[in-house]
Length: 382
Image (cartoon, rainbow, N blue to C red; front, top):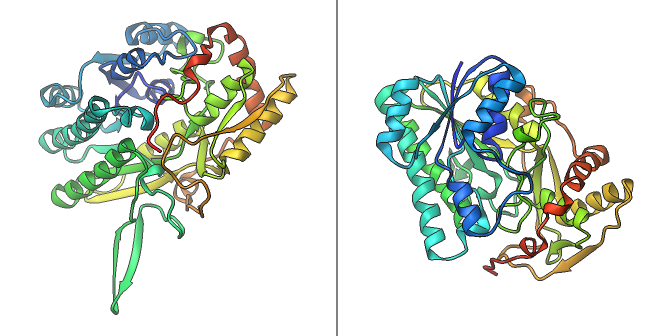
């Protein structure tokens, strides 16, 4: 296939590009370095050195013999987005090109405005590029389980059948996001559903839980091909952050009561899920929503798992509850369906002590790079 990956410099975008290129697809990645820019502005640099996109592509070709085309462009500018889609003629567009941080989106008005404009603008432009050049392009969009919030009923895969006054219909599952970032993802889904109904587009929306991981089959033994592994309070996902805290000797910062439950998945499972979605495109006029995670844990359970993994390699790990900087339920019901990707063939990599221990070893090799002042919460909306 011809795969266009938007946001191809990101934590998920770069490993995804290598994954498709390694299996023989023709891959083009696009990025405008927005995440790098705002990471620098917020003093949130990643743990490992991050080569620029041209360097990454060149190193990947040396490492694997496979090629990836890289374009530095801003998908939030429609002319640039349209030209790339027109010239590359993708079969599939994988859309990661959004500001991905909930804390950043709640930092202040400029950060909120950037998040709102960029995230909705990129999705809107991708939609119209497909409409103008090829409505049969399969758009695979990265959503988030955070769209749903924490309702007191089971979470279905995107849709809910309702019976009201003797009549039945199916609607998008009610959503109640907990940050502006997650709210932009809700609005993305609404935009996609409108244009699918109106122009018969083909869309898969992947509601992804927090991702953890560092090593993929394409970057083993080559640090220059690692993803942009953040550990700070703004861009670091909770598992990656806990692992770095364990290595640095900082108590694992559990927010509040620590009973917040979410669905998590390994970085390698993200690659599986996106490939499974791309390999099974939906029909025209269909919006398929898949909940993308493999396991559910509370934050307390995650902390205990990191504690055990640290102990396994001789680290002294402490767990500490701190005031929750976020406005969220700290105790709640959570039961989310996630059968769709399993039915497509997902073979999960579960969060074992061995996997966490391996990550701790890689992080320990960069212990001197850890800046502890970046770990404690710097953004609050509680």
